[in-house]
Length: 468
Image (cartoon, rainbow, N blue to C red; front, side):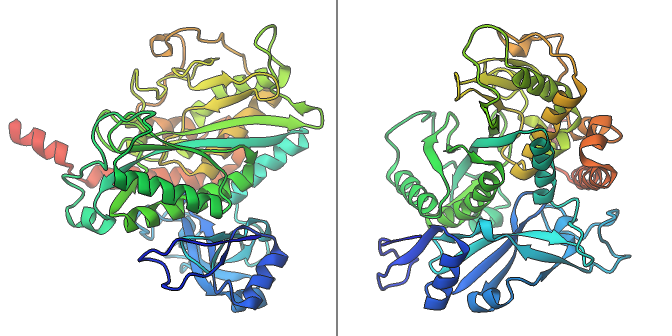
């Protein structure tokens, strides 16, 4: 643990003082609670959308009760983006009375939040009252796939890059305008630009500082091709820790943007012609090193070959886990750098699966998830597909050496969430990897999302209808 001095800003306490920051050990955390440096704990569980949900607890009380379970209403894992209590889930519902689940803090996930001085964020795992883990909890789903890979002698290393769009005005202002007439934080294409409007440069600096001090391993922050679009790249790390760090990132970004008079959206397609992705850079490691190590000539390493075949064969059945909303499928459009078919290739950004890097740095980039994906679930899907490739030996198609958008022999990405559901429900790949309970739970979530959208009249429909 280290201390850092924060600049005095309007949103921070008036007196300068050192605050503990970053990822810390359990012992250092308890000592900081005893000393009064940490006064509050955010105990968080990722919901189906990947958002951290939970309670803010008084730090000394949390430490006293750390070995016991906190309670959380089960509907947190059976709801939509609006936190609507939904029926049709086996986990909970009106008939079951919406009871509590137990939440146990994971001591390995403790990190301190510099933008909320004196506050710790700790991820929790969810359990039934008889001690069984909740199968449908995203963190448990990922842990299950990581354990399956460990049984095969492999550990997952994960790096991510995510895009989001910043708009002028706070979230409250955007809501009052019914999200109409939103103006991006800057205009034009600033892809790879090193000069930004002052308010944007200030936000980038605050975000970089906050992520570094929170122990979130950010590598780079850059402007992207669309107006207001940002890309953040995270360093490689252990898979669960990387997902936990990303959850902290998703907590930090809206807070800092709001303080700067802006609001972000992680929609996969925030506007017509604009797509935001959540790319997974992953490799498998064993005692002998990187199992994907490839030097650009000759045959692929056997594990890399099996992983690619599994991703190409398995990911079509797992789309609701990495493309969970109707909006997600509007991102998949030709010549937008979002894939439209399940192809793979060497350093080819038109493909769904890109082989990149050389030697020990060789890895796969899975370009299918959109920015609205839950990272735990997107990685669950990728790991499940890789295991399918290792165990079931699906055929490896030829690599795509040109424009993958013109590939006619590859399976297309689902046209919409309904089509994705058809491939998900009853799939042997899904059943073998996740089990019936998880399959039915996420199928119900997708059905609820589709039902909501079918009832809505959009601005585009209204505009088109008036012209009819």
